[in-house]
Image 1 (tube, rainbow, N blue to C red):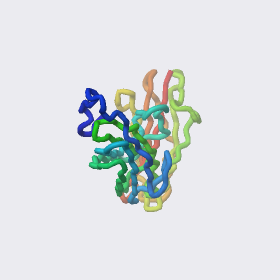
Image 2: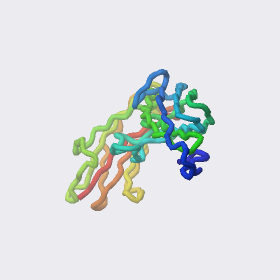
Image 3: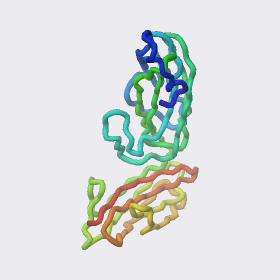
Image 4: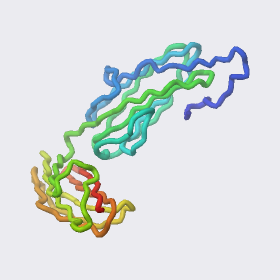
Length: 247
């Protein structure tokens, strides 16, 4: 536990408090749910409701990316697509009494999209830890370029499988952005991060842009990351990514 005082030991006293505090609710913009859809750039209101049989001490709130495969409790931890941009937040709030509330206003960054976790932890004055609560935040950002990709071979699988006898992968990317598209960048890397293909395309500030067919031939058996990254004229960026396995 990362909260101050959680290492104190009280169990030597027969009358020690061993009852954990409880995080009764976590509401986001007035709604209590395990998952929320929020907009990039908005101010998100978080309200916490906490209870203890004797005396609360601290509550910790943090926001962290959900796209690194980690889990909280049960679940695979898998996400469909890596996040765009970064967002992290951490705050410890001192509280007291048998019942406390905490209100926070968090500003969602303007340049992100994807999935984040809002994690809430608490301890009481005796060092007992509450069961953490974790809320999923799905961030939507209409300002980012929209990327659609058609691949050959066409496959919904990830990784996409290719035989070593024909290790060529073809993609055709379509990008749309109302502000104008500056450029498109395509690349393929090995698991170790070694670059095996790259191509940059000037989109000429068009609001719609096609890459045309781009062939990527992989040099050997192995697992590769293929990425299409689009940048608009305002500096907003989005990307599409798939794994390709040559076997």
